[in-house]
Every structure is written in structure tokens, then in C-alpha cells.
Length: 93
Image (cartoon, rainbow, N blue to C red; front, side):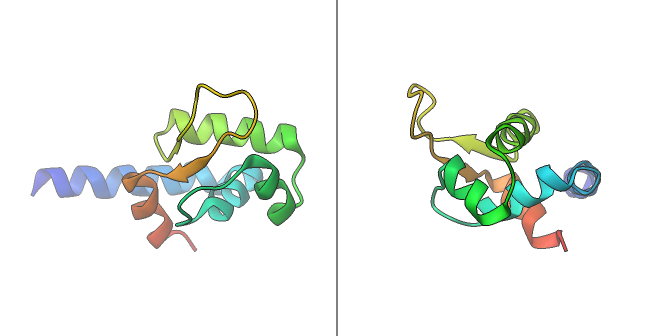
């Protein structure tokens, strides 16, 4: 039971983290439940600059909301939500 409470608290904490940054929130929602997405496609979907998306992705990765599926490449990186990210996504308005 305690683990569920911890997870719930963490989810609300992460929602707050997203809400205070429009760029993070837009980036996160653009990724959504897609199998993968390129940063350039996030830019197109959100009208954010590539540096805004890049900074948002770094923040989202640090909070374990998204993962890069092919970290070893410098161009054509693919991102998707983690299981935690998907849980946050279902609660995010």
C-alpha cells in the first residue's frame, strides 16, 4: 500500500514539474504514447524551437519521464515515454 502512495505522490510532484514549464509540458504531451518521436517532429507539433525541445527532453530524461531509444547516435534520436511517463500522462490535463 505504501508503494502506491509513494507512486501517487511522485506522479503529482512530476505533474507540478511539468506545469511550471510550458515547453516541458508541450514536449511531453507531444511525445505522448507514441512508439517513438524525433525532436524535429516535436518542434513541428509544438512550435517550440529546437533548443527549447532539447532542454525539455534533457529535463524529462532526468526525471525518468522519457527515454532515448538510440542514445549512441548524434542525429535521428528517438524518444518515447517511460512507464512512469505514461502514468503521469494519464493524469495530466
